[in-house]
Image (cartoon, rainbow, N blue to C red; front, side, top):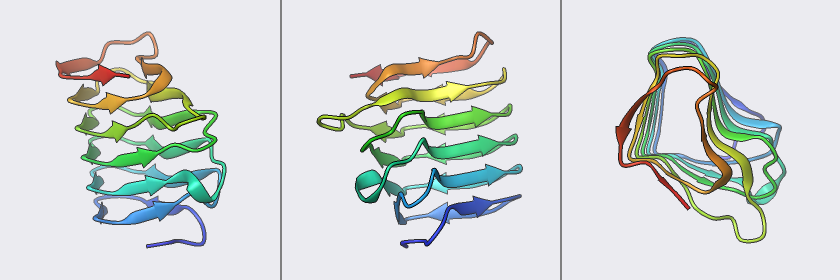
Length: 139
C-alpha cells in the first residue's frame, strides 16, 4: 500500500501486512478505540514526517510493526489514550538520522513490552504510570 495521504483508522479497524510510505506529516492516524496495527512496515525514505503513528484513543493494539526512520523530528509512536497495547515493535537505527522520541505516552494506563527502539529518548512515559511488561530494549 502506498497511500497518497495519511491512513486513518477510527473504531475497530485493522491495518495488517502493509508497507506504508511517509508522504505527509503523520503516516497513520488513529482516532478511536479498538483498532489494530499488525505486521506493517512504515518506511520514511520518501519524505520527512513528525510521527509514524499518532494514536488518540483507547484499547488499541500496535503489534510487530517496523518503522524505518528517515528525517523524523517528533515521536515515532505517539500515544494519547489509555489501555493501549504496544508489543514487539521495532525502530532500528536510521543511519545518519534518528527520532527524538521512540514511544511517547501522554496519558496513564497503557501497556508495552518487547519493543526495540532507537531514538534520543526511546521511552517517554509522560510522567504518568504505564505498565512495562519487560523486554524493551533501547539502542
